[in-house]
Amino acid sequence: MGGRMSRNKGARGEREFIAILQEAVDEVMGEDAPELKRNLFQTREGGADVAGMPEALDFMALEIKRQEALNIEAWWNQTLEQAAGTNRIPVLAYRQSRRKWRVIMTAVFTALDGDARVTYTLSSFARIEVSLEDFLNWFKHMLRGQNR
Image 1 (tube, rainbow, N blue to C red):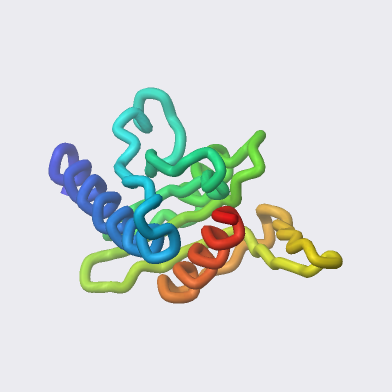
Image 2 (tube, rainbow, N blue to C red; image 1 turned 120 degrees about the vertical axis):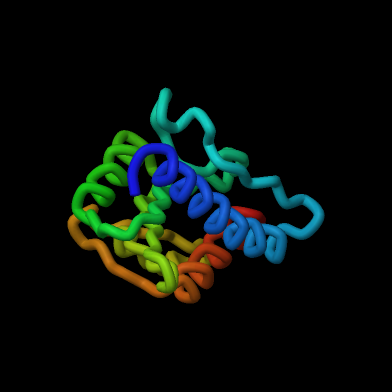
């Protein structure tokens, strides 16, 4: 598959993953939830695949891939480039046909510092692969922390 069919498949994959994120955002934020959408200018201007996250919730640089041939190293490098120079956590979501979504991200942990929660992001070389369910649990946790 090449050309337009491949681009259409990628766009469908982005819409599919954004719908999953939207459900989590709606659950956490309720009536105040923003509407997430594809970043239609990503090819021309660069940037993450998702637009619509308010600045306070823009904590990740998300790259979404829906392809049969895996090219994880190149995709991860693209994700790191998007996050470079920002405080955003690099996140790569990908899926092949008839397979579940998988997520690769920089290892992140949260610790308590007195009454405050502090999130630490490890080096971009300390990446982890997690299931969609585990990613969504983390994503909702981050939304709740940002939405105070």
